[in-house]
Image (tube, rainbow, N blue to C red; front, side):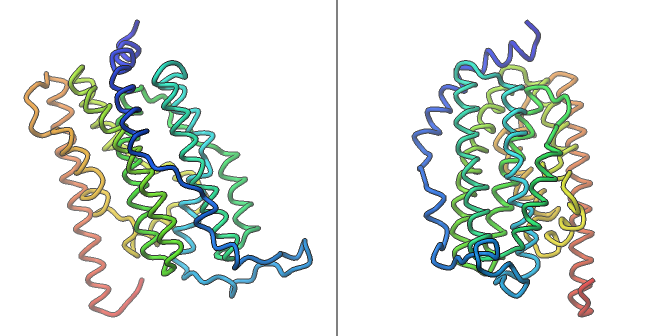
Length: 306
């Protein structure tokens, strides 16, 4: 039994405990309850009118952010494969994989129904993008189970923040309510993975710290492979929905504090090296965030928008 398989076995009781905690905390919800069906009307195929840009009640940034969030959620089949491959489909791990997948599935259902019914975005373009993005799929590479745990601890929180801030920026109370509900799911998922990684730190501090450093330094959002992701990410960052400052202050730092990464005294040479690397990276990330904040302030003071 290799070290990763042994670790998964040792974590099984922690998985069962946190699965029970999750099930007691999670509140079932129905995607259709969050969609204003009375605002819907037929498209040309059924004798109505096809989408026109003036139909959308959303500003350009909200349309981009909602589309990006939805397309990210659309890749659930790939994400299921990723965690099922890393964690297995047996025992408590397998039960969690199924529970997580079922809960995540509600997100794309609700977001797509909202956007189509309200004509928030072009449904034809949206379907074309969904096909392209889902066919391409998502592949995280050869992450170990520990690296996968560290990654999803950060990623679930990043997704929660992105959804919540998108809802606030949408200008639509219904979208805000829906995305707040989705963000609640993402937060519970983050807590599950975060707790497991905390247990892994107790079992094998050095290997866990190495994985945490690797995933913090190399972190990429799961939607990175979609068309125009970089351009749209810049637009979203300038709108204050998700930028480097948010990533540093509201995603990385809270999780690292929970794990007491910078307070621990049980690391060996490997763990200490990984922690030093992480410290340097966080310093550089903070400097980059300050640089873009200063640029944004200068633009605001000069009255430019570029």
